Length: 247
Image (cartoon, rainbow, N blue to C red; front, side):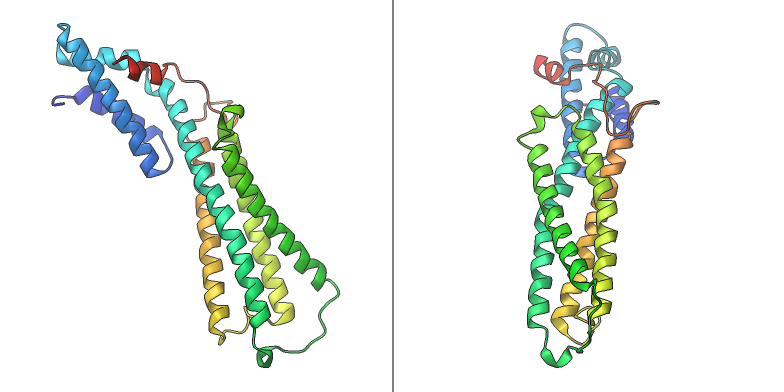
């Protein structure tokens, strides 16, 4: 493993070209480096100098520009799965908690008032939208899992999920605050500990969803070529799996 300078430089350049979850990116790079080192050692055993053997291994594997799009596709899918799982689990949870809070909210803290005519419609819209977000998360998780082989452009699915979250999350937050202001409910009742706790959890999960969605957008544009649609990845010049299995 010593003296792998050319390969290490190649892997470092590949690392700089990629964006995505740290663990998935680390595993891809480790797999590529191990395969390149095995190939270089085979060439060296055949009589080539070490540096030339490493360059030959890299030539067989493909340049960074050829290989990075294929790697980036895998990272985009990984990030899409993470975001979809977060939506699938967190949105129904927060909706359930808020439903409980509104039911057990102390009667003494409620301020009787005539609610606007649009209150019921908006409340139902929030419920349906939150239900839809959970469904979208579940379907995306399924699509990027078992359905991955049937999807032609999975990175585009990840990108659209990221855009969806960036539209949906601020919209639901604005609608929720509007309802709370109109009903003077748990959000405005800062001395009610359960309401404060659920509010804090809601903000935390919403922030996490936005952050994860931003990473979806970053993953799908990191290696896009000029004139190429963000989220669409070109096929790599080298067959990575065949190369790795060869050595």
